[in-house]
Image 1 (cartoon, rainbow, N blue to C red):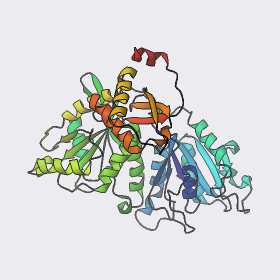
Image 2: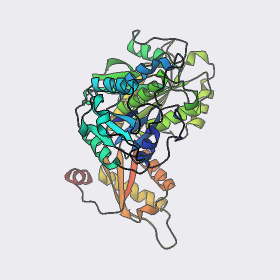
Image 3: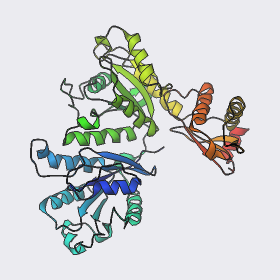
Image 4: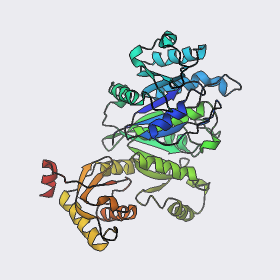
Length: 443
């Protein structure tokens, strides 16, 4: 699984960004209303496993200290994105803010597409009215989130622009480890302890880290690049302004990383946000380690482990590491776990071994079906790594219940634990012709 590119929708309030996101995602992810400023947080959607689309809050006139950071918000969004979609209401004339946003986006030299939204309303201005932004006509699209006008052409243009070389996407032999978690959970302290120098500002004030800080470490002849991300509060708690784009950067760090260390505070109850972050890491197909911080502040570590087992029962394969940045306890073990998990992410299993597992699973617990129809599972092959991906071929595979898929995953992990990495299982109803590599594994 490759890093998914980020597509950022930017523009002023009520330009239709949320509606466009919903149109791309084909479901109502973002709240849509006629009132300007409805979106108060970044909303993210994975579009056909091709890219991540971010619907950012609309830009408004500064009314307080946070909204005075509008230019910083724009800069952060532009920096995090791979393709920028500047969204305008095609029925309204340009103002100075539109021009400033476009100028910053153009200065980044990243692919920039101009979306003239609401083109179905019959009140659209001529295209010449928007030429002063400096965006080429071939990069301008008349679209309608309501009717779907121009969406197909826009999607093709996004895909074409994603072919541009991006300096941050070059393949590297470095293993990337991202520190993910809520604010004030101890990410920067752990980052400093791992890096053995003061790379990040450590503060008791929540939300000190707003950028992605990086440090590279050599361990066992391997280079591990550690990414320290800004903490995420649950959506209703996020402030307007820079913190919203810190959330975007955290999402970008998850996508960039090979392994994510999910930090949870030993002194606080595990929040639903911790579980949600774990879900994001799994969905992205990244390796995961649950790292308990501030162990020096508690007395009963067994109680912490019991709580983790209860709250993260959907992550039985994730290793748990109890740490203290203050005392240095178990901190360097994170390197060993990272290397082990990265090796597991690249592990390949012989087709003969997979078919033996499938056969045993079917005999032990045949997949249920309808009254006169049952799934007939023929064989299983591994089609990818990072994360390991397995495809089961057979007939009537659409009847396979999700619980049986989970059962098959358990059977695979009994033979090949795949510690710290999710594994993906798909079912295919057609025949599959083995390639030479699969035939070699079969032999």
